[in-house]
Length: 122
Image (cartoon, rainbow, N blue to C red; front, side, top):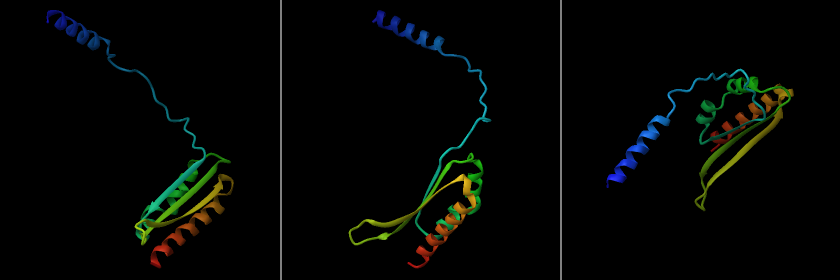
């Protein structure tokens, strides 16, 4: 018992002295580069499409992407349960590059409008 207690005290002492007191360093965020941006959104209603998915937010994200990078945007719309018990769903996907941001945003706007119309027609 005495040997076990001595070993335990030595281990606790060794572990407590082996811990470092502090880490000195500097973290910089100036070298951040976004490449191959891919955004995926899953929604359950037209209200979620309107509140979650705004064109201004997409524009802000595109401003962070470097030149000549691939961009993918996908929206998945969940529907009602089918007769087999599984939920119906469908998705739209737009691929583009940072070279043609206006064309990409036009397609994203069309996708948003189509998703809202899908829920409004139900």
